[in-house]
Image (cartoon, rainbow over all chains, first blue to last red; front, side):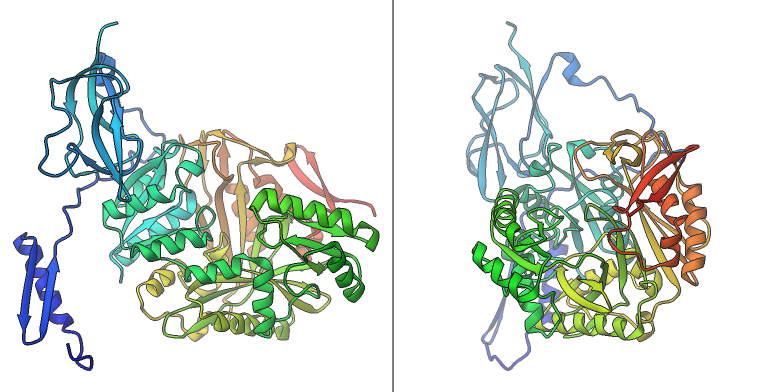
Length: 154
Length: 459
């Protein structure tokens, strides 16, 4: 491109808008020697919204939550890092585990990618996978429950 | 303007940044440790990400977790607040590499000013007066003795990588050099992983004055009227005010001009503070903090400028918006740091449940705090609970306002520094103004009918 010509930022802006509205992955246009390509970022999961502050008196009330599945004898496997949750070793491959699978302690359940590092998350108890709690390719925070396992009876 | 800022901090400063974001229409992302699940910064930000367990090393200093949180939430800038990663050149460099705008100067500038000996050299090169002492680090006992012979005793040996009084020794005479040098160097090595030290003439009766600066990427630099932060305990500031009481006008102008020269020579961008000591009519550079400071609100009160908002404009590539009249102080402001420390028991740190929290209000009163009744102060982090800032037409009026506001301030569930501040405001020497950094060390605290009183040592 001619270095003395201003960058066609207006056009780029329009393309970004078009990309956003259309939901498609990539747009490429060419005019003469100028080629512009805009790509969508991989889907960024919505984080749970921050709670509103409760009440005006300031004293936080203890909100009685539903009985936690952990009290139901279920065991939560939590994320040790902030990152992106993947159920399979690579795109297109089979998930490490499905609901209903029996897993043994030490078995890989998923990957949490953080800064390009693939952290394999393993079951810390043997049991049955009852629920997958995080969405594939979604963001997870530290300590977020990823799976519920029903531990084997001893 | 940038679209979304991740706030890599907690407590009142995280709230301060989130508030600025909200007013500018910038989205904010809070990060928090599992000890801070009930914290206001986590509640008030648009989004939040839990980044680790309670110890700061695993959460608020956990660079991979913070960078991952920024990536997951699509943040385009990181505001480090003060403390934690605010002056970590490596973190700033990582942000630069992954395309996150770091709210602060370039990583190279942070590294340069973070090395105290190098900062001294930079100041001297920019024509800013530095305390008589060594040029750069001192590598031997003999080098220290040579400086002593040149500038005279007492001397102070300081850690190049240091701060907060660690790796620091005062030497009264040549015979004490060897022990002090080895001790300071060893302590510096243990605390900062760098044993190098430098030497300055020790000034005993001095005031701590500092200049807030802001610089943008268009080459504009503004320097604000000075703050006086001489009321300290063990090198920790407790009360800050602006302008400095009874400071000659030519000294004020000199401080502002010297700060502008230094900042200009660095190609600085963002907010920073140039710190000086002032003794016997002369001022000398001590260090530069390349970040937002705890006491920035006193400058905001007398200038009407939102320093955090200006930081966000600078990082967005916009121009500073500081009108000329903001640079001459409007009245007088004083800040009191309300810490979770018991002044009756040697400032023992406190933690636990805040039972009652009722901050003062009324004209000229500002409280920056993350407290609420029912909040549990975790034991893992620093002890700052709240900053009370009072503003009035002159120093006398702001001291009266301070007394009134401190008296109104109700916090129960733990001991705080509130009664100490009341005692300082009742001290005659403080009221006269211009106390030195020895002010608190020269006094005993006496408890009297539920109140505290400062009693000067008989010397």
